Length: 371
Image (tube, rainbow, N blue to C red; front, side, top):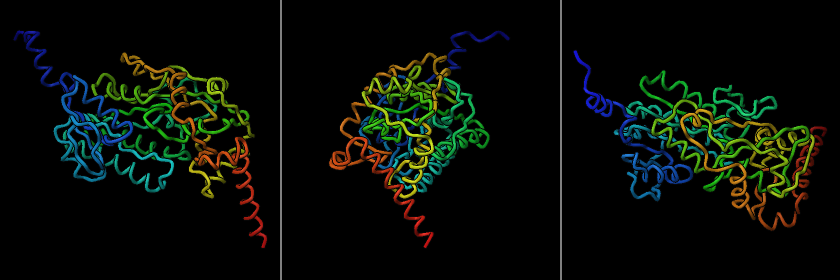
């Protein structure tokens, strides 16, 4: 039997290969943050047939098909029918959220979306975690490859949730044959109102540097993240993907570019004070967040690069935008201060006051134990 005509073969491939046609894409968390930016981007793309937007409120994108619901609702399966790809961005990583409630939302939401996507016949789910899952450790390679071991612990804000989402991503294809899961891990996210312990670091009157540490800063602008997510949606790349600006900045470069001077503390003092301040409720950031300002967790992004993707932003440009976004804010040890508080406390005085408060509490507890 002779082989089919090349044009006939191409037409057959076009009809059977989802990557060769314009996909219908569902985005969770579509009303705000990264979800809103990605929804607008995909809705404007000629390579996308339709965008299904899901959130607990309606967003601004008029051309998307909106469904209002909690992603933990099993009814989401019906809303995903007809979608080829789901991008799950409905995550709560707010510093002020109760940790137990945050975990319940993030983990249960991801479980429900993966199960619902498989039930609805979706062939690909794209999840977004963070390069923080690699862990910030003194012996990390510079840069880390995507295949590097995930050595983070659950001690930093939301990282335990992200590690559990990574585990769900690995298990999903085995539990749901035919379901492809892609995980995107951005470096320090900046832009679009992103508020994390790492962006708040640059709201401080002094940049806390732990003596003997070796920070290396790599940023990821939200526009570059959306571009990387679109690459994954269009199946130009898959698997586990790291995304960020090319290269990194040393702490000395950060200080020179920002014009913010450092305040250097011994490791035991900095980590001990951070743990006490968080334990007594004075700051939202656990001590584990500090590790990500001490040691490198820079990623190479080689898989995206091999697929032809390149970041449009440099680390220097993203840092400049971050400094512009946080101008006028005052944060000490992860806790935002009002303008009056910051003025009254002074630049280094606020830090000293918080460290002193932790010491006072410690002494008071010791005194009670002696009674």
